[in-house]
Image 1 (tube, helix red, strand yellow):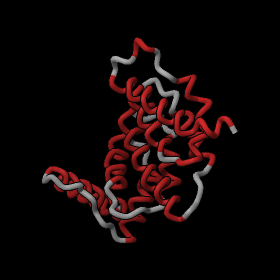
Image 2 (cartoon, rainbow, N blue to C red):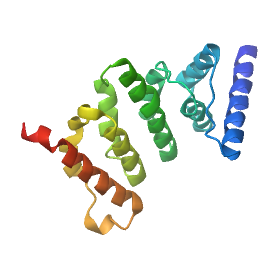
Image 3 (cartoon, rainbow, N blue to C red):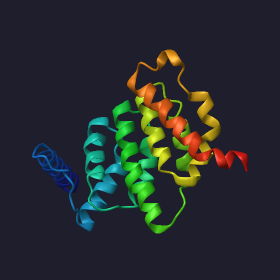
Image 4 (cartoon, helix red, strand yellow):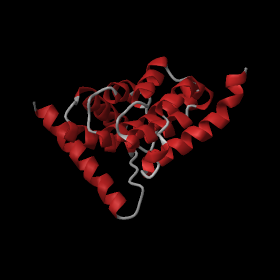
Length: 185
């Protein structure tokens, strides 16, 4: 029990440090020790509490370095039934610790991750769809996988007054132009 409470305090401490850094006008990035990264990763793996996940995702998002072991937990979190702001937070963490970490090593994205993104494209919240598309935009050529989904999720013209719906439409148009050469081949 003592170990858990010291980890809990450490997480709260790091969270407050990030918020202070952001309030001071910085980016709030922290360089964690290998032990801290492991503790954050373990806590992330075990947590399903939205309040706790918000703090943990903040720590993950503000890690100064890429940490591939976060991938497994982020995949799990993206599949949980969480508030939309946490899904968006987890997507941003995934862009860094899954996509950038894999790109740095020259590894392709896993099919499981692509399938999770495909499911998120059908979210009822246009902001979640927008951030999913922004994530897909960074998938490189693997993003072609989503081309056939775009027609099914394009917002109708009467929805364009919503900023997120408009962004969804614009990102889809850009991605379709970018990947149209793949469709023809």
